[in-house]
Image 1 (cartoon, rainbow, N blue to C red):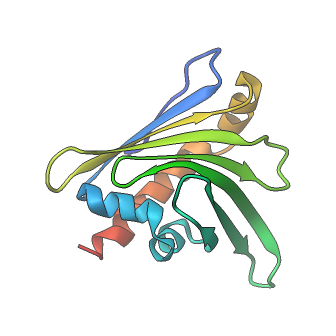
Image 2 (cartoon, helix red, strand yellow; image 1 turned 120 degrees about the vertical axis):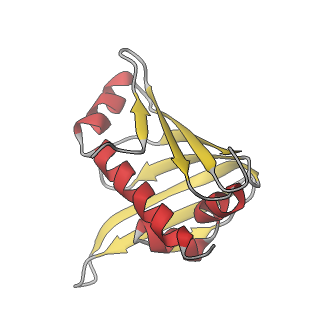
Length: 155
């Protein structure tokens, strides 16, 4: 089955461009990234903080059934323009990956469809290539499939 989320990683560069078209109106797609209750559902993680404004911040955490933290990530929001753009940093704690910069652009394609374009910039091409060796593409596609499923229920 073809993945709906597309990744473009040009050789020698330190960024990845991710695109995905959704069968969702722009407003619902943006809410999936900006409302904690929705983020928790499709990302299957706890939102500890989501302060959507310039100089705001965010923090997500996932625990195993025994209560041990298995994933924690955080960042600063640099730009928050509703239904248009979120610019933020992203740092996974305890992984050895440095902080990355993310530009999320939201676009209406029609009244019922929209597109997300993410550019993720890493400190170096080597850091980006290390990320690509993980099941990053499959994980991103799976997360976006889940986003579509969760947000469809809000229509």
